[in-house]
Amino acid sequence: GKSTALRDASRALSDWFGRVVAVADSSTVGGMLADASLNAVVGDQAFVMPTVRLTPSCNHGFVQALGAEAVLVDDIRTAEDSRAVMDVADIGVKVLAVARARSLEDVVFDPEFGCLVGVSSETSGNLCRQSRPIFDVVVELVPGGNWHVHGDVA
Image (cartoon, rainbow, N blue to C red; front, side, top):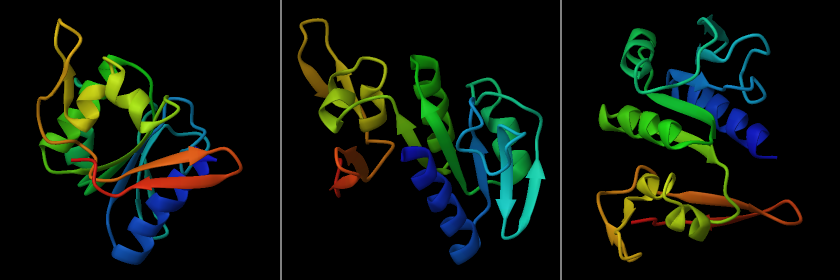
């Protein structure tokens, strides 16, 4: 499902648009190479990096060393993962990712993931726009193998 779609999207970015794509995958399910959790793909060439989780402390070094123009993250599970993705986006790198949520609404109301769509939760429980979303478009995998596309997250 989701991991396969991400893998296909990263291949399209690499093959069709000539982009350097770094793949950060803590489980190696969505990785281009089964034995690596972070790799960069340029067409048919793969540059294997040591197994590592994408964290705020390793982002800039790996992403910049690879010359990545896009990062695929499979998958965002924690607040630390969310911060790492935000750090990557802050340096101008496009991000494609899977977040552990059932819907965009779940992401918006989740304190660990809301920042990905530019939302923060105030202490009163009210939501407010904190920043621009990391993702311009959100795609939900819905029952039956269908996709629901939210074309403008902002």
